[in-house]
Image (cartoon, rainbow, N blue to C red; front, side, top):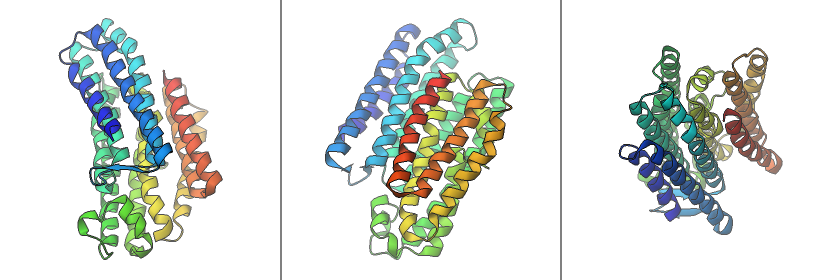
Length: 345
């Protein structure tokens, strides 16, 4: 599990060094550190392929195939955006679009943003996962508002409000999940451990769990941009710096879906009809956003609406399930993360 600690160490180092390094030297250094984190992400994938589930620190960190895919995507897209940021942000600074303080804040928040997504992807406790996803909201909202202009501030405010409301629904849902597991034969302290809940999924109280699952679906679905909770996404993506837009569309939405799919894996055993919820939200996301794609004149807004559609396709694939449905959903998640980030570049 040294690779996970390596990712956190490299990204936090990149966030801190911006305050002491010269601008041009730092741009290259932070890109190298981000590439190093991507190498660690690839190493985690290798460990999972060779040995299955990887755990450490008393199962605080729990990495299986789904975790490994998201960590690899987050660190890879994060590294690519770091490389792209070097020229992009230096040009913004040279043209006076940002100040030196905004330059430093950008890189500090950016690398903490990537680290928070990795954290949400590797912890086994659903409560800590919620904390990680909430951190992504707080840090990325500051990146959306980086330029300090009226439209950017308005977009950041809308994003912060929608994200906070959504994540509050998710927190309430996780509390209901906790209640559904309290009577099961394990300690209360481990009631929110994802492996523990999977092991006793058929003993969870169905009524409490279904209520919790619906709240989690709405909460994390809002964060993932699923319709009809997607209104924040086009504004935020269009006003943020392009490297941030790439990360928002490419991997932040995936991280929110990751949290939803973790709970859904338990729901398949704990309650009836869990897949129906996903298929409905997936189909609505596709149907609602397609018309907006044809009327957009702003390229970044068009890509943002496209992301909503693709999150719907991924959610629909997981809802359909089976080997083909799940393989198709994961393949689409990988393709979307890489292609959408490159389009923003």
